[in-house]
Image (cartoon, rainbow, N blue to C red; front, side, top):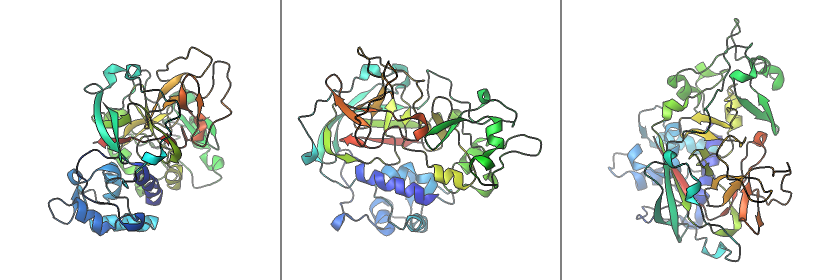
Length: 394
């Protein structure tokens, strides 16, 4: 639902960063976010009283389709107000809070710079670029990485089975209470028992499963407010629907460890070496409220209209950088430039001294994160570094 969406977006408000371009608005007194009227006033460059896609950036741009209730390509005051009321709070501003994190940097902490050689070159659009970017008041050398978010090491999918007799090989996985479940036809047929709710019935009398097998169905079912026609559906969006989308990752070339933790918003929390986005937790409450299920594939990924293919879990399917010691392999980078490593080491052991974000230190890797359990819907929990950001161009 939209309240879930905007709770996530307000987290983006706290950590988003911006380039050296001139800022159109400044932070309001007492750190309050602007009203819907102020947002339109600040962003409405042609002064027509509404916002086009070209006029918005940042978190509002990323969720343009969700706010645009009538799908006319513009955001009106009424639509912004509706979003505001759904959360009981103001929508996020276009840019960041201008919070200066300079005093939070701990220069005594060992950090390793981002190694761009780890990325799969053919998955990067135009090569990896360097750019000086202002991140929360700090001039920072960043890597700018653009991808279409399409995995190459593994096949993307499958997700939804087509019949209640289909086995687990014809579908993906789902999670509940930190456990992973195969979404077989039997699993679909018994969702009413799984969730103790007799309103679940994703299959027809002939045993065929209701699946969003068109782009139109994907768009209708992937909204925070699922269209009534697609309640009780297995939601499957295919990567080819959004293969032209470009996701831009802006990541500090050398991470800066912060004494305080930073929350992440709805944008990506990092990326695998294949250029696919690591996403924040899937909004399961919004998905389940319409009696829909949006399975991940066996690689921990699925597709939505606002980011294409992305991962919510780490299952060992992507490129890994093996370590010389027994430490788990490296699987990617968080958006703050710190490395993300696997859950278990070569002996099958998990780290026991992780902090609130899922990270810790060692003499070889400095500060770094470890991915969470595949069934936990949480790859990492927060950021301990100066955050970069992601942008999606549809």
